[in-house]
Amino acid sequence: MRNGHAFFNVASIGLSSDLAQKLDPEMKKRFGRLGYAVAALRILSSAKRFRARIVEKGNGTRVKTYQIAVGNGRLYGGGNVVAETAAIDDGHLDLYSLEMPNLWRSVLMARLRIPNCGLS
Image (cartoon, rainbow, N blue to C red; front, side, top):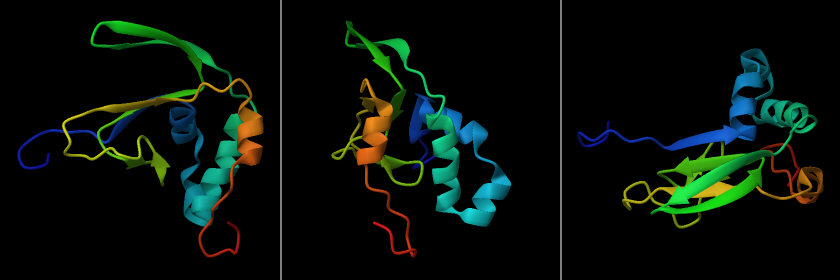
């Protein structure tokens, strides 16, 4: 509750929910953010796209995606961005869908940022 109103930060299906289920609390405690990276690599090794239909104001779009997140704020899950311009009090829900055909290519091109270990 915030100012007497219920709200949520983000709801997601796909990779992030798989990660939340598979992240071992002991690994998270022992390795911190690096634990997320290890768990993510495990998830990515078996990731498969799923089909979904996204409907907004009566207009539907069919997608084949690895992840869908709908958020009330800008960030979730340790720094993932739902939408750059999102604000928790803007009255809008923002959505992203991870629809790339080759997930590994994107992962290999992404820069890994782990605080206090010299990598960026």
